Length: 304
Image 1 (cartoon, rainbow, N blue to C red):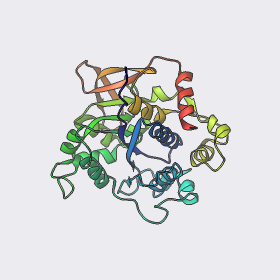
Image 2 (cartoon, rainbow, N blue to C red; image 1 turned 180 degrees about the vertical axis):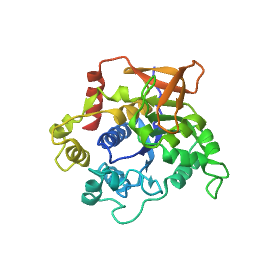
Image 3 (tube, rainbow, N blue to C red; image 1 turned 135 degrees about the horizontal axis):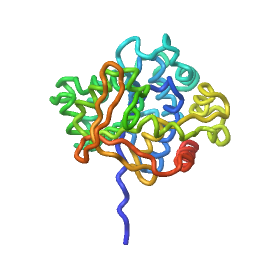
């Protein structure tokens, strides 16, 4: 008996790479999953106003042999950029590694989203959002254009199978990604037309990864360097964003199960509340194995 090979998950990553080094770790995990045939990276989006985010993503992609991956960026000013002190490593990676965006601006994220979704199969794309959600709010609110006669919400409803969001605290609480842009967190939670699974703050907090980067990777590796610049040489970091990528590609088992229901996000504060509902469009992850087991799997992917 033969088993048919699984189809790689076509995935778009939306990240605030810069405020925390686990975004760089998440990119490393995603590239490892692509090389193993489990994922196909369609594009990456940067969701803050930092001029260094797109270049950092592009540099990491180029280091992994994928300089062709389309990269888009948020086109608005003053959101989590240098004035807020959120550029500890993305500037260094952009300036010290080859990439397309040291000088030139990256394309508009919403336009690139529309291009990538319009060119994909129906229900053929997973989006993994591991930062605040202004890009996704702007995508939903976009109108028909030369790329597609569909509105953003219609395009998402047709082309996206599911959304994975690293955000919120479950079953209720406040978390940084939602707090930084509560309007978009509330809007996406209320208006996204496909299922959403949330990987909450409590999931990634006890999963400490990154030390193997310093033992197994060369000093010039941009992901290792990102961790060194952010937390210090040889230190580990909680794995909020990495867990979202692992779930987006491989699903819940064997590390988590899911709780089905509905989320409500306060558009003023970003605080979230949960309502259990077996028929609800949302879910959140619940840990079912020790955090060390998940950390081992993530570290192995990061250093592949």
